[in-house]
Length: 357
Ligand SMILES: NC(=O)c1ccc[n+]([C@@H]2O[C@H](COP(=O)([O-])OP(=O)(O)OC[C@H]3O[C@@H](n4cnc5c(N)ncnc54)[C@H](O)[C@@H]3O)[C@@H](O)[C@H]2O)c1
Image (tube, rainbow, N blue to C red; front, side):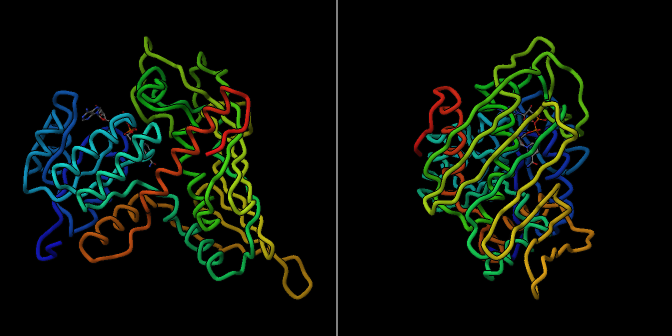
């Protein structure tokens, strides 16, 4: 890329995550210029541009934004079902793509994004913000140095007591979201666990899903503010998913994700068991290593504060790759594998049997 000028980005989808996480990240990066904004709700892109990036041109149809030849990259912050469609169109228009998680709502759509990126020779990166938390980086360095040993088992989850996002809107409509907490939250913690495990290849999945809180309107999660609720809307996704993933190297990972369930409180976690030490990662700002030293059981716990602003760092990695030739933290095949795991979980929940990937 030409590094003598700023990276010119258009943001498509100007709702919660665009304003809450991407906007502050770009505002802090002087190498970036937001030149276009797009949202299908009339007036939304205009208001977003006026309030956040004066000078950015607002669009209602993303194809008009993609038709501009002075835009280097797009950042997709739309509902899940549009990620693949917009990414494929963006690659055809010669843009690099940053996309919010989950990669896509089914494996074929995730594969289509990867293929289009390769055909165009343009970068595809999908948000994996949890990899960039201080605690995650520390744990990963210990794994790479061999100090955790062979990781053969683990569990991860994101449990919410109450916290259904945008109830009745796109989040709870299977055709638009691809599923409930498994795809919404699972993509975060399963990715972090597998990344820390050294990216073993998943081979089978077994799981169950439940929907017991579709008529419950309470919330105790700030995260449930995402999306737009609709009282007359659809709720045809799960509110709890539990399962087990097996990997080619024999390792296993237990998983559990809920938007609503009767647990003590909201928590997100990864626990990994290695032959030399174990890792507990919790809520983005806590990590502990459990091992032995001089014949004693010992825990190593960095006192913190541990930075959990992974969104900013993930977006910075995208810019670093394009402008400075940095190594991308994410490989599109990891996205395809992730969506295959989630699809297999849904299939297993339906059939009651273990599903090969
Ligand atoms: N990484 C994270 O921590 C995190 C957190 C929340 C959401 N997300 C992801 O971000 C994405 C958006 O979630 P959100 O919470 O911001 O949802 P949201 O509903 O608040 O925002 C989505 C926006 O996209 C717009 N949109 C819909 N169709 C469009 C189209 N065809 N063209 C242009 N704009 C369109 C909507 O009008 C809305 O403004 C989702 O994929 C979600 O999974 C990620």
